[in-house]
Amino acid sequence: MYIGIMSGTSLDGIDMVAASFSDQSVTLHHQAEYPFPETLKEKLIALSQGAPVTLEEFGTIDHFLGKTYAETVNRFLAENDLKAHDITAIGCHGQTVFHKPTGPMPFTMQLGDANIIAALTGITTVADFRRKDMALGGQGAPLVPAFHQFLFGTDASTKVVLNIGGIANISVLTPNQSIVGYDTGPGNMLMDSWISEHKGKPYDKDGAWASIGTVNQALLNQMLSDGYFAQPAPKSTGRELFHRGWLEAQLNVFNKPVNPEDVQATLLAFTVQSIANDVLRFGQGELLVCGGGARNQALMAALKTALPNWQVMATDEKGVNGDSLEALAFAWLAHQALEGKPGNLPDVTGASRSCRLGAIYYPD
Ligand SMILES: Nc1ncnc2c1ncn2[C@@H]1O[C@H](COP(=O)(O)OP(=O)(O)OP(=O)(O)O)[C@@H](O)[C@H]1O
Ligand SMILES: CC(=O)N[C@H]1[C@@H]2OC[C@@H](O2)[C@@H](O)[C@@H]1O[C@H](C)C(=O)O
Image 1 (tube, rainbow, N blue to C red):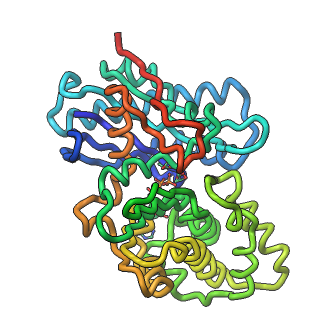
Image 2: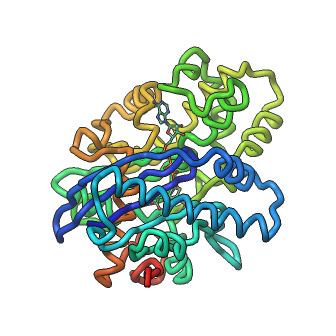
């Protein structure tokens, strides 16, 4: 069995799974979600918002995260009556705190010291999955398309797997064609940020607040003209672009009053339309949605309206829990690493070749 740990760009906490793999199939044994300790969450939010940080504070967060992942694994093992020796390895994504895939010195940074995870759990740990791909000229993201392909394969029809986390990304699985995958742009991140500022809530449950607002079409068109959307793949993005300051700049340029609930409705439409514009390029087929956004009923309804020729459904309808899919992917990537198999798809990330991903940390 492998453990997969994902804490994503929404900063909503830690998703954990225990799963086993064969060449053709995956078996999910256990899954759980755990919140971050409040002090850690505050530090991560400050860091993600570009707050100045000293090297000492930075090292402290790396340690705090590593310790938190380790303690969470030990709790997960106890809750599921598992022992360390039941687990071959842990695949830990870590917490992305910066992602800059282009320019002369590209880098991506995931924190959470995996030495601490290996030492405190007694389990071999694989981490730092993205930087080898980037060293080979790739974006280092998205990495999950290879796992989407493994899970949903290709049959006679086109399937697009859509993750709506903080950022949204798609994997396009078309029969007899190489897989296409990239980040489409914002997922829940801007909606979360706006409702948190105006209502003090971490997210807009079921899109209820957005639903009482009206989409401002002119503001929506302005947002959709951001240069990211016209860029060809390979491409990936993050908080570095679609953050609160980006929204502030958009509202300043727009320079007309918009009610807060109308901004929320426009942000929901922005996420939906930016995704739909990309999905529409691939004709018709099934759109399988995972990530927290799949739980937002208003967002799912708007996606269905924007994509009338697509069968839009949550991955759960295909038997795969959409809340734990990314954690499952990192358990699979750890399995790939230990089996000495490649993890990246050069067609997706733009790396010069496929390669083994991740650094292995031993407990002894
Ligand atoms: N019932 C719901 N209604 C509306 N939004 C929801 C609901 N449940 C979850 N969400 C949204 O999903 C988000 C969490 O999604 P998820 O855990 O997939 O993100 P992540 O893994 O952190 O991000 P990423 O995939 O970009 O790394 C929450 O922040 C919230 O915006
Ligand atoms: C740098 C980084 O952490 N990117 C995440 C983020 O969250 C969604 C999207 O942006 C995707 O590119 C990626 O995560 C998933 C797990 C991936 O690599 O496929």
